[in-house]
Length: 447
Image (cartoon, rainbow, N blue to C red; front, side, top):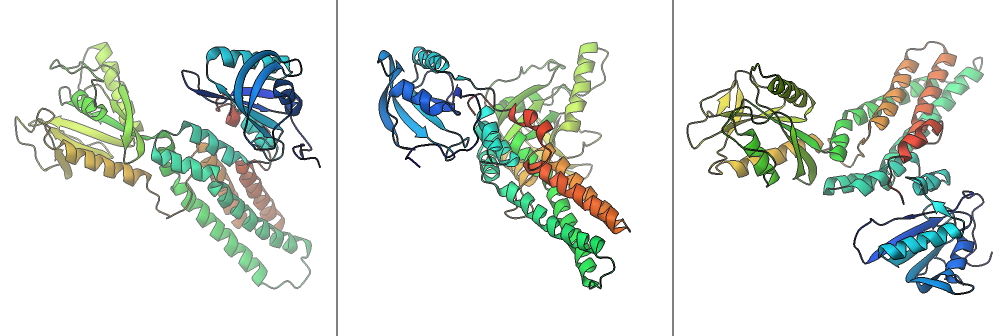
């Protein structure tokens, strides 16, 4: 095969392109192109192609053959398939990032037969060409969106195949179980040793235990991906908005001595212990005849129920009568009165937002909360990150549990096959057509 020629048997019929770097003022913009017509299109723009995967500085023309209309001088990379991101022929143009340059090159690509890519189309083609499975593709989407160190590590592990390898290992174990079960079905009159069925049942129990442990870890991975949510609640004038402003390090909420200032929830995001966090300041909890304030109280209680942790505040001398589940009790206004060490058997963090007393200790407690909510109990084990994964593992686990309840070998075998199918849908090896649009639609253009 000639150096630089494609080795791909199947490629998308259409050649697609997209800007893979963000819009805005920058020095460089990367234009990505993929598809069957990539080689001819790149030749049209620059003339002779550089060596595969070797960067070369070339002039980019509207038509290199006639050297009509010089568009830019760019760094060019040629990726013949299958050794490319999508598995297809493709190339990248590292252009100067001026809007006029990007527009002119895009027009030249369209003139050469390419079309703008849809959201996630590059990664979808990579999936279709076997360059990655569905779980790894979702990891790439998470990596693009990662804002914190913990999100980056989690997404990178998923992109690297940690979660896929776990699911594939389960599938291989299940395949062996199913093979033993088929032997029991096909050769009922043979003198198969009783240890075969006993080992089969033990393997099913082992898989169920592994899946249940994985499911129990699921909330931790999802919290890292979406962030830990803290709801700040308490009566009016307890200092909730002041606490939000201190946590946000800016004036995110209006602070006023007038009770009922906060009518709706105010959210700010940040990072604690390397994890994305969202703080939600809610309306003061009290009985009121004001319809708007009453709606604010209703929404406050909704956020309390949805939060991973509740920061329940009260002012010195105004002790709460109840304590919400998953609460950190915070006694504010230590500068004007004493705050008890505990309320209703729960410890209290004493602070003064006026003087700053106790605030650093409170921050340390919140960091510990974040770490406890996101730390994995199984050292090194990959975490669930999406509801789709949890649903798939639960379905497989339920099928295995149903298999144990079956007395007929044929019925047990059918439940085992259903469990295998559920695992296959996770990685995209079987029955994924209805999932593809939902998964790849979340990507940005150019990915």
